[in-house]
Length: 224
Image 1 (cartoon, rainbow, N blue to C red):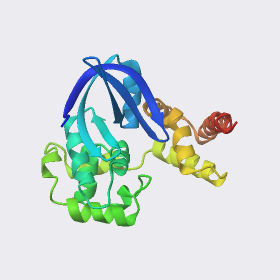
Image 2 (image 1 turned 135 degrees about the vertical axis):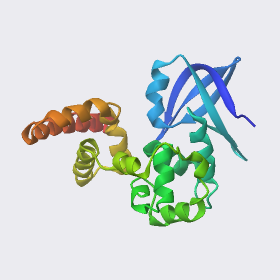
Image 3 (image 1 turned 30 degrees about the vertical axis):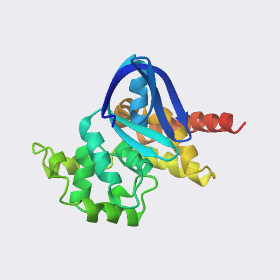
Image 4 (image 1 turned 90 degrees about the vertical axis):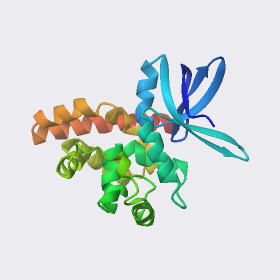
């Protein structure tokens, strides 16, 4: 069983919504799926260390890599729930930090879990029922429930992205198309968040028009 790998990134790949790297470890190339939010780190790094979860099936072996060991271990807990596969596990950990996810489950906040694409009410409730009170080792005791609430409260950036999402959805674009296209914004979340805090309503509207034009151009290029 492969548990940890350190090596040189020789290739970054994407198949549909799955993203990952080929890692050269001692002359052997390991194909590993990563959380999309870490692809940018992979693009600027020559070497990377990953905690690995390995799944062996009849059609082959799949490797899932995580920067932190607690992400890997929480991923294992998520996919232990009946009916929840690795892609749902990756989607959840893409949207939540470990402490945020654990608190959402412990506090039975299914409305937060269903914000992740592919997570409906049934899956959210199953996660809560099967994992609640089993994840104490993932909780940072220095973080209070109050601080957690503050962290997950919708900010200007998330509202801004939600509005763009709704506009694109109303234009007939599919969820996966929208998610891929708005990555040009989400990778610059900190910068855009700071900008939004300093803009008037009129200036925000102009910024949204600019971003929508960029996204629509990207979508039109993909369709040709």
